[in-house]
Each structure stands twice: as structure tokens, then as C-alpha cells.
Amino acid sequence: QVQLAESGGGVVQPGRSLRLSCAASGFTFINYGMHWFRQAPGKGLEWVAVISYDGYSAYYADSVQGRFTISRDNYKNTLYLEMSSLRTEDTAVYYCAKGYWSDPMSFLVDIWGQGTMVTVSS
Amino acid sequence: DIVMTQSPDSLAVSLGERAAFNCKSSQSVLSSSNNKNYLAWFRQKPGQPPKMLIYWASTRESGVPDRFSGSGSGTDFTLTISSLQAEDVAVYYCQQYYTHPLTFGGGTKVEIK
Image (cartoon, rainbow over all chains, first blue to last red; front, side, top):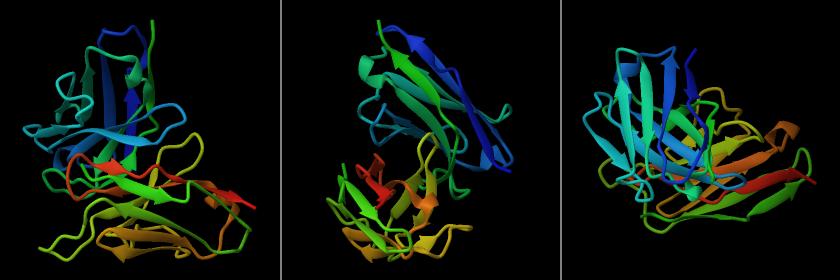
């Protein structure tokens, strides 16, 4: 079955960097756009970024534009989120999610991973 | 950005009773090219990731019980649970996928009365 497994979260100081990974299985990864979302403790859901199936197009939330980079390795079936200049307000559970349709960049998502916690604190 | 507003913030309903809650978008999410509303509903149980229930405002995802139904068009939408079950205790979010940035409502927390 379709599975997404995030990793790479942890505690990091403000201003530092961190890279999250999302290992995908159970579907043809190269056919789907992929997303990152986040959820601050006790808060609602926030979309972070999306990348096209081939990795050539991406969009970002204004809150992370210029600091975060989404990428993918279609040989390794893995999605990444490179986060730099981290702020305390980036503290959240980060989820990867799969585009619903096998088109270049589906904005509808269906399957989510279990998430990985990122805490930005001095 | 399209702002999504959900109401109420929380709702307590007796088991077997109907629960309905609303979602309003700051601009229409109805596409003139295909006459579809780019609106989805997600359910998030405590400690779990969200699960997609409804897309195109009223299309149930495969495997979702038929007690869940979505309605509305343009800027005003409703999710209805026809007969609340204990496993439906969760926070429900609407989300527009009409354009980026993708945006969510603040959520409606459903509890048992």
C-alpha cells in the first residue's frame, strides 16, 4: 500500500539548517507531485511547498520562501525539504503528502505521512 | 491568498445525531472551465495525520463511509455527518486547492455530547 515516512526532524537552534526526508513506497513516485505541510503544536494545518513530478517546478508559502527548498530524487523515491535560517515559528510537525492525481503538480493531496517534529529553540 | 473560514470552532453532538459545519472562502473556488469546486475536507484524529474525506466539494473519497457528505458551491460549503459515530471525534478541516498557496480553514472540533 502507499506509504510515506518522514525523517530528519529534531531540535535545532534558531538560524541553523535542517534537512527533512520523506521515503515513498507503494506507488510510482515519479508520476506524482509531492507536498510538504506543517502543523505547529496545538494549531491548524499549513501548506509549505509543492514540487512537480519531475522536480523542475516548485511553489512555496510566503512564510518559507527563500529559506526552504523542496527537492526530490526519483531514483531513490525520496522527497526532501531543506530548511535554512530556521526561526522559532518554524517549530511544527512536518508532513509530506502525495498528490492525488498523476499529473505534473496535483494541488489535491490524498496520502500523508505520520510526520516528523522540528523544534527550533535556543 | 484565499482565506478559508470555518464555523463553528467546536461542536458537541450526541451519538447517532447529525453534525454539520461550515466553510467559507474569501473568493470563489469554482472553476468556470470545468464547473468544479476546488474544495476538500480532511479529518484529523488526535495524534494522526489528516485523512482526505471529500474532494470537488461533494465527492467522497474511496472507502469513506456514506454518512459523510459535502455540499455547497462558490464560496460556501458544508460537511455533514448524518449519524455521528464515536470514531468521528476529530478536527475537520476544509482546504482549497484552486490555487497556491493552498489554504486551510482553522478547523472544527467535533466531540460527543
